[in-house]
Length: 272
View (spheres, rainbow, N blue to C red):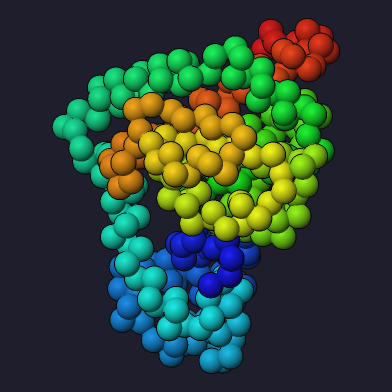
């Protein structure tokens, strides 16, 4: 598998979302997503018949998403149980999800407020402002919650490149220098652990945002934003930290950056 690629499911969604419905790659991704729960029983012929492609076409598709052949794709069948646990377990944890979600989020946000002291925020914003190239390296599970951060920072004239497991751009990460900044976001720490080799190879200044208590991951970084209490991988609450917590944390960063480095904001009409 290509360096930087972690899981099959995000790669399939990337192809499914980014291609037209009648394109071969979209058809193959759609078929595999619809049949992910029985992935280990599928054959090359199933994919050939679905997308009207040759055996070599199936192999090229597999290679395009980071796998050597269809057998390697089929070996990823265990992801079905893993992602069902990740995406569905929290909603099944309580009988009254709305009530507990509000309470859990209140605790998460309080933890972040305690973490993001003025000194911590000032240091992070200064690094963002002074760095040449800023790269945000994150798992796909957290990337959706960070899109608004990326776009709002662009409105502040600070471009942030997002690199994810489905769009790994490993050369970009490895080629960063000490004038650049690498922001690594990994709620449970598993993504950061899987990407450790390329993170270590990067020459950039490194900042790590996480809810993991595994401090063996921390030694690579110049600054660690560790949200407490820690998240245990596969915990039903992990999804809260990967989505809501990271969005809230980086919203605070964006607001602080705007106030520090964009004096023209007072000209914006906020009446609407």
